[in-house]
Length: 80
Image 1: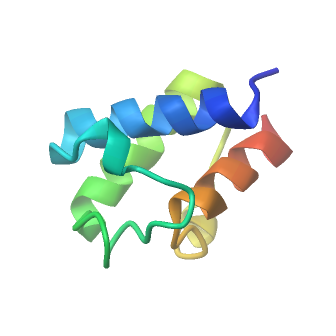
Image 2: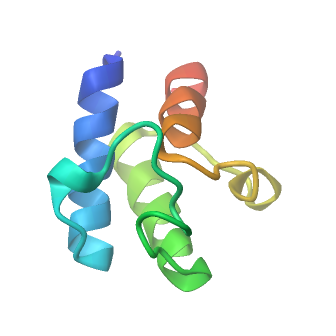
């Protein structure tokens, strides 16, 4: 089971690979769209990569609820 820090670090690496955002900019309080400029297409890629990396299923209807990095971390921790 991953820790909150490990999930955050993993998500930061994923966002960096997909959107080119520096990993240190990916913080729990950052909004994917407003702060990190992750568009809807990139968000799908982030979700798919996170599902593979953390062995978790994130249904399409849940993705819209993952507005911040913290939302995604909490979801992954709760469902992994």
